[in-house]
Image (cartoon, rainbow, N blue to C red; front, top):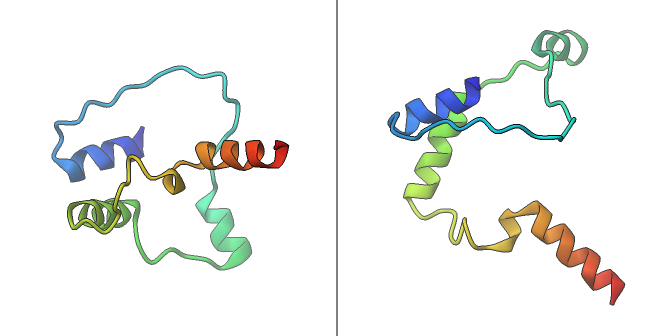
Length: 87
């Protein structure tokens, strides 16, 4: 939810946040402190920075066909590769 709120703020706040239930049990939780402790990695940029960069890229046309181009849709790419292997 926190990332959705950051996106909403960067894009102007008029985008509704919709929460839907899922049966996907994967977890994307991370422990930043453990990453810092074990790997010595400390990010130089924030999620807000990344959202601002993405906004700029879309507005500047740096991501052509972002909603249509298959290379931006992992599931579609994997399905195409799977069907190609079957044939």
